[in-house]
Length: 83
Image (cartoon, rainbow, N blue to C red; front, side, top):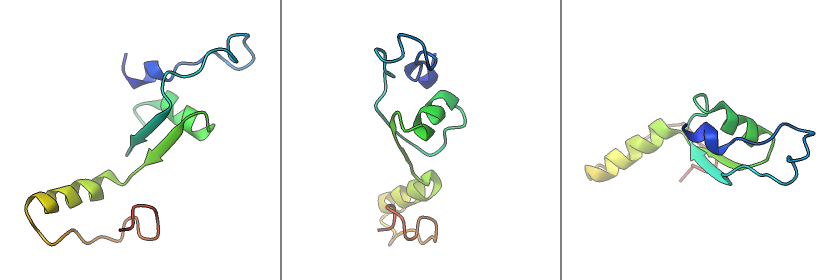
């Protein structure tokens, strides 16, 4: 069923719509293309969604694991990912 199952909500206007909420409250990811229902909930502000530049973060983690001084990139500069 995957993550889309957690994002299932009744259609707008149905009587169950006010009573039932998504089974997920918050999501952190790098891409929501494979989970369009989660993407729709995020863009309609029904759930809290954080999108991080996963390529840069994975390279930072790799640099830390190999005791390298770091990974230099301009991705995320001036955002909440900026160290």
